[in-house]
Length: 234
Image 1: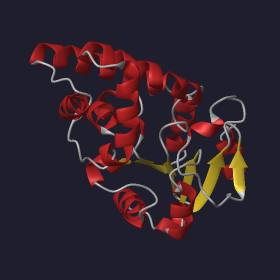
Image 2: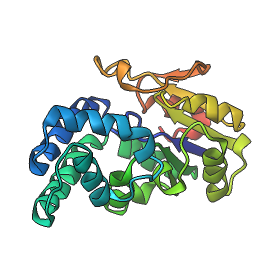
Image 3: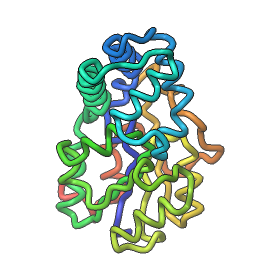
């Protein structure tokens, strides 16, 4: 095994931060002058299209969804909404406890590290400024690729950019979007992060896997032990 490919939300990020998602989107609605509940419903309904780039970037997305909700914001109001939305997105992608140290450990052991994320424009646009970016060799975003998990092309793209055959990659994720199904179909070894220590977040993943991986860890730092002593510097 030469490479590890991670899911992003709930895997590299603090799973508890997912509980902030509705609050942050409703703050955006307030800036747009849209009913918070109506805006939340519209954003949720548009998720499958937003994560494959159908609405464009964040600014265009917010304008489109606001119009669907019966409001046409002017540029000044839209500017404030975009700033609020990006600030909220930053809160939702807070790193989980110890994750940066885990990534640094794996890189020090010469593993190639990748990412496959079903994400909308906010993550793609902000990625270079995140703490994750210098630690991930090959990020693959559904928004940029215009396809979502478990499409095998995402996994093939990640492996190709890492320069590692799929059979020599592990895929680590918290489930949802049938991501572990996609990983095994691609020939990778799936690892489930159960997030057992984060009550209340288990039901937040959409389109859950029908497949339960053999390898399961509760917290991400357990991945180092799962790899075995030959990969652990103590």
